[in-house]
Length: 66
Image (cartoon, rainbow, N blue to C red; front, side):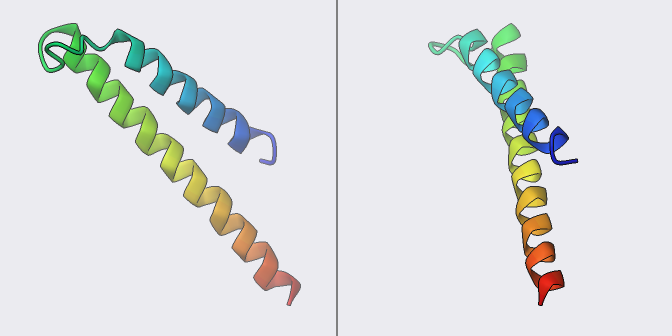
């Protein structure tokens, strides 16, 4: 689990960056660009969920040590 969380976080960031390059900034909600916008939001939310999971595990460890 120690290696998987950071790995998944890097993959989520990579997906976000890739999808940001696919967005047509003049009209972002038409055609393939809308799929890229959805991909950006999905990968950003996945990154945030993984970050929350990592922080909750750290808090649980600190509480367990007490």
